[in-house]
Amino acid sequence: VWVVGGLFCFLLFACSLVFWLCLSSNTEAISIRVKVFALLGIVSPELEEKRWNLSRVNEENRSEELLIAFGGGAMALMRLPRAEFLHTFEHFDCDKLFLTDPDQSWYLNDTKRNWEGLREMNDKLSAISSKYKRVIAVGNCLGGSAALLFSRHFHYTIAFIPQVNLIAEKRFKFKLGAKRIPYRLRCNFHNMISESIQESKGPVKVHVASNRIHDMEQVHFLPKDAQTLEIVVHEIGGPGTIAQEFKKRDLLVPLVGEAFEHVRRG
Image (spheres, rainbow, N blue to C red):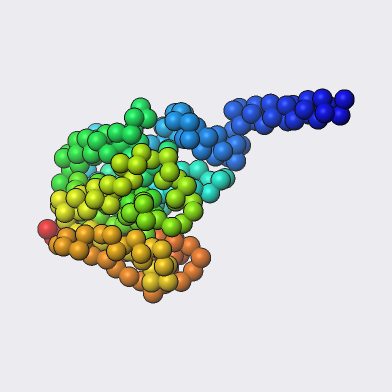
């Protein structure tokens, strides 16, 4: 009787949990649901609509400049992928494109879940960047990796603490996230980044902190002979990422402003 009763209670709890995960609009429930969907290769409606969002200064006329933000990772259990640099970009009068990665797969998966994200994103970014005279991209962490991965389309690229070699990545949350990615893509990831940097249209600035050992290890996998690449090492502390620390110290807007000044001179 006790066994039957215990089994019944367990099943009731499991059904309640599944019901909550499937129907709840609670952030924690959505976060868990999204991660389960990603593992199963299921499209998450909550996040697909945030994958690609273009904001124009003037709906009738396209501006000459496009500012792109690659959303970073949300590897922690209760976090959601979201658009980044929203407030920073408000300071710049140009068209803006906010990108997120619903699968948290370093932008390697496509909308149909066939692991054709590289091709799909290259096609879309090529099409939209060709419409602008100057394109600047910014990304942090996983988004920093994406900024490098597609830097061939940009006139200026700013990447904060990117993961460059997914095979060599030692941090558990990144290793676990990368396990879902097909082995051929994981192995070739740093080569794909190197090729894109070599083909970039302008400067590629990678920002890391000297006290972050794993981030410093990752930049060693960047191409040594890329003329456009510059690795900037900062002596900066704090619990957040470099991008967060820059924002706290009012350094992020000037950094993007310098990128605009450079591409306008060029």
